[in-house]
Image (cartoon, rainbow, N blue to C red; front, side, top):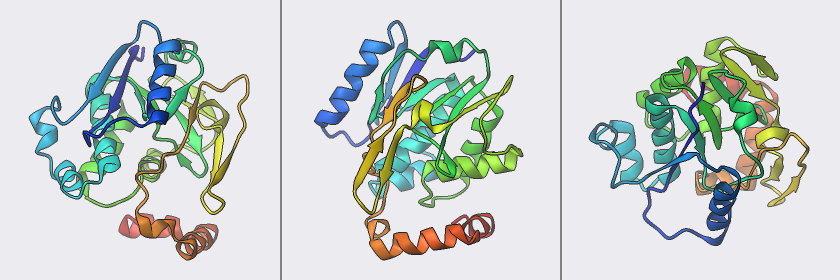
Length: 235
């Protein structure tokens, strides 16, 4: 069974903004009797601090990417739930944990959300993701990395419930549909919604917020070229 513990990261050392504080309050309200583990630069083990990928992200002050490394490491080592700090929790995750699957993840567009991940220690999928994160110091957002690992695992990106995997539709963990071009989003919660990811977007490099860049990526993705580039060059 997935442990009732929640991992989260705050590596930059800056003060929490108002949105983050409100999200943390929702955790305390709805996740009673869970164990909470806040990972910072002060309490990470030396093997994480000294890893090549982590050092690169910290040196470049790419805190969101450093947090990607930490979240996957923590789930691999200890199991439990990882939450981004811009996630608002609406209700207890226990009904999902009681299904006794070894991995719970959610669909996010054409990828897999990285803001909510639940797993047992040493889960095979988490191991795959960690291997990818350790192998290179690129700027692929975690949902893309997770999709790559998922494709290598041989599963289809459709809702699945079985012993080693619970893959849920976006309404469960990602009901806020963000439009980068409009800089706005549409919230579509349902009775199945457990949490909302409010998309702080700190992982997005400045050039990727450019309109022409986004249009080009959208076109390449529609043509199937992005998936080919990911496989060949880790795009």
